Image (cartoon, rainbow, N blue to C red):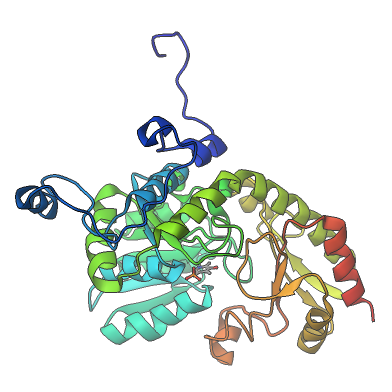
Length: 399
Ligand SMILES: *Cc1c(COP(=O)(O)O)cnc(C)c1O
């Protein structure tokens, strides 16, 4: 209760996505935050510059480390993810690599899920491994296998949920409990769900990483990334991983575009989910379709877990045609409105073939081992009128 007798509660998700961290009165009444296009920051005297560099007096120094527009985005994302702090990056890969360069050393083991975004997989297996970090893969939907893998006491447990591209869902609460008991830090790539649908930190994860290129930006016009976690770890990630190891700083203009995208994140995720549900049911009923993975379908193997862990099932669908890979490619080539492109979470519906596009960083043997089947199609359902999405799919399916 506050003085007015009202019960205090945290503001809702969309309210925070629109207002958090910004006060128009601080900027001459400007409704929307100014964009601070500056590389560096000036000091009235050398003593105050020295105090900023030593950390004694927090201040912006140079925009590779921090910038007021980027800082606002970081505060807003920290609020949406329920984290103490966040750091923004020039890309999702910038976020993921800076986090790992900050936290691992040669000889450490990291335990990662069987299914990962292609470039993350390449970073772990072809990048980190070269520097003496041991990378172990386990199917994190299999609790027994996970418990066995944790016996070697990895430093970090890392997974995506839903996983790109095949929609496997990992139980965040259970995985965080088991990993925590084994002394590992848990990092979740929350790109597919966005904080609107899943908040991993509230379920026990230590950190969250994002490709802001996808749903957060939401309009296909930028590349960006974010990491969220405790203040202490985010300071390490900023002052080491970002400042010295990757330099992958987000430009202030792109921070403004992501801030703009966040304002409609709640609205967009509801529409993406609703349309994806209609598209998934349509696909499931078609005789040409072998299987459809969308977490809101009753036929989805992890339907109950998804319903518990996700506020809505989201806008991503994976499916296969009965006639296999060649038929999948023919179908995709026939589409008129739905665009053949990687990336996801945009207003435009996007379709891609993971085996030859996003996940071609896996060898064919690795694809087979990691459940990326040759005929798998990944569809990011956009914000067009759903009747038009269905019509395009229907004309491309019919011979
Ligand atoms: C796109 C993506 C990334 C990489 O992000 P970029 O912004 O492209 O660097 C990481 N994880 C997932 C799940 C993605 O979809």
